[in-house]
Length: 127
Image 1 (cartoon, helix red, strand yellow):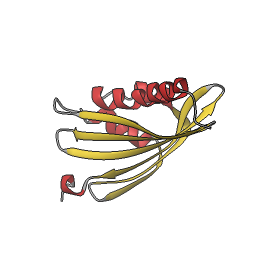
Image 2 (cartoon, rainbow, N blue to C red):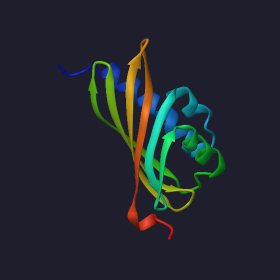
Image 3 (cartoon, rainbow, N blue to C red):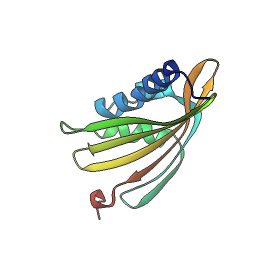
Image 4 (cartoon, one colour):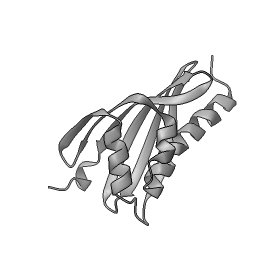
């Protein structure tokens, strides 16, 4: 059975905290979204980042998104207590395009992100 539209809106609002943090270069919104023990996996300029979501917070707080930054949220799936969200980012820090996948769990009636995995588009990797 498909989730009601209200759940899609709730997941989108949760994911907007991620986008707002990246766009503003301020991790405080994302800190509301991610669980304390959320994990991060991805390659940034060819170097594997993995482990605590704190690395993402440091990246956001030290690199401004830039004036040309754009983002799009796509809800891939919602199944009762789990949701998968894809976030497309263009021109983060003025040069990097990402595809992020966020794994959200509905806990105590609230959508929280437990994992973030990302791909940096190969044509934006700094050698």
